[in-house]
Length: 268
Ligand code: G3P
Ligand code: CA
Image (tube, rainbow, N blue to C red; front, side, top):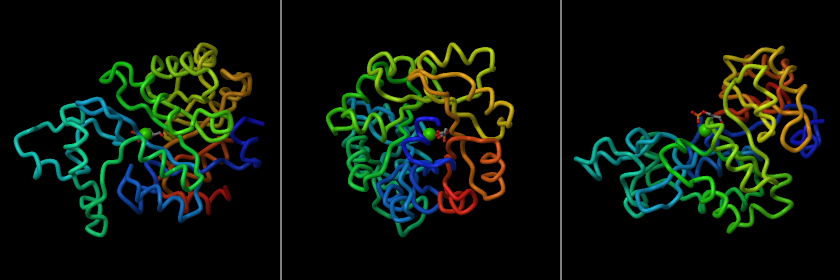
């Protein structure tokens, strides 16, 4: 059994709420975490980046434009990059109205606020280090925040935390800084390259469009950084048919905006 499945005690794929339950609440906000919890979903994915003054915040895009009212609040500061705004400036933004007026006033959370909320719900965290090339040292800083919040305690590390990135360098850095932390590489590396990835990662996490049963089987054949078979979490699967398709390939987890739909489809 793979570690995630063993920890969670079942053979069905884990269901992971992508940016929170982002089909139903604004992505990467505390409201999206709450919505996942209300649906009974215990794994939440998020994206971490850094502000101008060095605070870690949870946001997907490298710009604040799409998911906040930054254009109205700070006109003239195009292209509204996260790294060009202070944490205090970002805290003033409305990160909910773009999604639905019912969420007006939702904020861009700091990483600290986000993990505190995930912890309060007793959920588990799939944390993505986003655009690490823009933020030198973000791996160490992320681990520091996680440590301060108790997420590097033995039980958390073993059962409740995975850190992933599209950057192999970033994943390797996390593994080297804190070897106990489980990690995932986002992408679909050629099978011939998997042994190199397995030295520093526990998971290979591909887009579902690029996935096949043969690839999942090939990934499972290698042991990952913690000596257990490499796992596969796939993204972003938002309908029942696609969920059943990837579950049939034997994936270990499905990352989805609509976790209730996927859970109903695969019984996870
Ligand atoms: O968790 C995987 C998925 O989030 C990667 O894509 O662009 O949604 O961060 P993206
Ligand atoms: Ca992500």
